[in-house]
Length: 377
Image: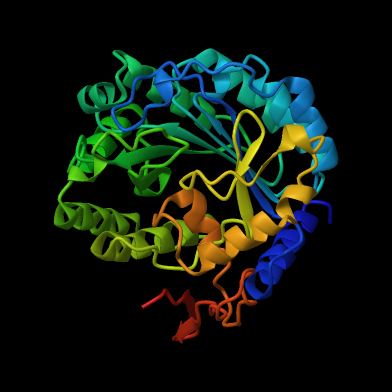
């Protein structure tokens, strides 16, 4: 019964987010550090030299006061450059009793530290514990794109060893840009030589984006031909095969709608940022998401209580702007997954703060008994 409860809670949270703005986000993206030991061509985080990031004590205070999340992503930089990362993850699982899903990405370089720490976290992990190991091509391409000689070898070893840990669902994450466009098949075959059990479902593909989180607006990442990107996404979606579960469904819908985003440059659904989720950086600043650098508030100024920020007039007004598509247009998995879940029913959206006509929730299309979210046309 205890293992079922988080599923029930998340279902309630999703249903509530479909009809009104909840009084609390069910999903949190928390950046724990901007330090990174890689030098990726698609990201400028590695150029930062951050100071005064959240301490272990501050993180613990935050989760003591904010323990109702159903879904948490812990990210970086490289999260494992924090020596206390495993302890932070254990604080999360200890404080958030109703947590269903915990996820973190890693560049996979510090294999022993990552594997040993993940094994400790897994002992008390929520029902869904997912780890993404970055993998942007075969050995030559990956190490070139990610700026780390010998990186691929460490990444695939980390992936292989994490796969052996019971209770951990580990995937390889490939960010497609003009640096590695057309390289998915080579990336897959290279990884499968090391991991013969590998399937296309073990890969996660996303399209490169820009935003305040990645500090990469100056990298001219839109140079990849749209038709080639569309072909890459379409071919990968076909290789993944049928939908095999909830995570597979989200991946399928993300890729399907990514095709529309690539054609139009517009978010294909009304985003759930500040409706279901928010992003907190490593200094405790709260933003709608990882892409829009509009600061909503500071946890250090509210005693690490999220409620005053979430319920503020600025947050409500900004969420209204998101619904009216007055935000930077993107389609990243971080924001797309809760957006897909938050578009399950047809229902009106309350009038946004600051006036104006109310937006409408995306409708639901049913075909052959299956439910598919209907995107904005």
